[in-house]
Length: 384
Image (cartoon, rainbow, N blue to C red; front, side):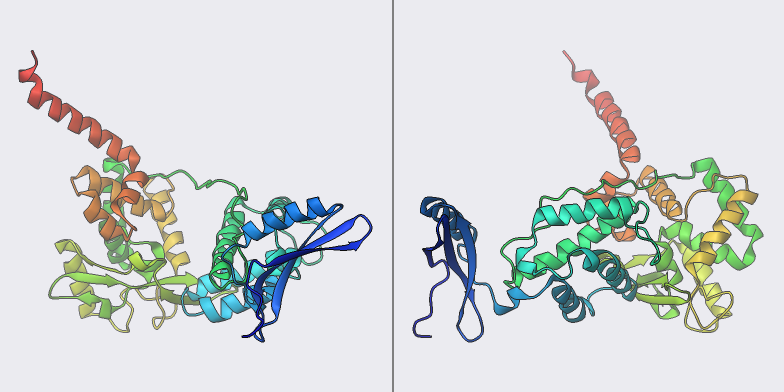
């Protein structure tokens, strides 16, 4: 378009005594009208220095007209146009709650282009102290570290998308400080306890197949609840993991794709597990391998499995581990038994083998020590 001012173009003018204004072009509206950013100084030199810094900040940038939208408008657009078909329904619901209850009340009305790192940090700090509150309360109580991390990761992703869409120059969530991971410590059943558990589940015939399958595959709770008979190949003994069941807020169940893309996988079952599922299928009805106890047309409720695990552990006088610790138990004993990390990472649905090794350092450290002794004994005869 003729006369279109290039991005990065700037000029200085005196607004009034002791006030100089600098402005630069950072993009253009749909009709070609330039989008400006402004700086101010008490002297021409001060304003000029600020303008040159701003020119460097926006160098190579061509913002769009939508850069004037508020954070609330952008988050709504991001959720409904970018995320609605790319995340699980439960994740979508979780993101929506974070946006409506925690982000919009603090920064929702502010233009996305002018949100600073300091403002986001201030929001995180407030939410950490007072983020958990009822509608009738003026000030709430401390919000869990995991929730702050979840809000940050979601907002970081949304702001990254805003950068790609040329709404902002850089992601303002970069440089913020958030609480560190404080996951509960991993607990596993040792070899003797694991044998006791496998013996104990025989006393619960309606649950035996479920827990035996879990102990021999290490599936996530939502994954094993979401298995359908269509996922099981009787001939090859393989099973496909492609969905996860979660509880809906307010009650009920929902299911969707696995937590991550690498979570979609096909694994070869141990012969004993494949045999159990073949026998189970002979008397099965409905689509779910492990159906809901109260409504056979629905999948197993994760809460039912969790509660039954606690009962079994208590009655067997075993440590009251979490359900996820059965997964850790499976992985730990697999590594001890000689399963290599790359194979195990594929079974577990990890992103890569290095993540598996980092997660189970308590095992790999012992394995390295044993390897060191084996190598040492092999070369001892060559010491001079």
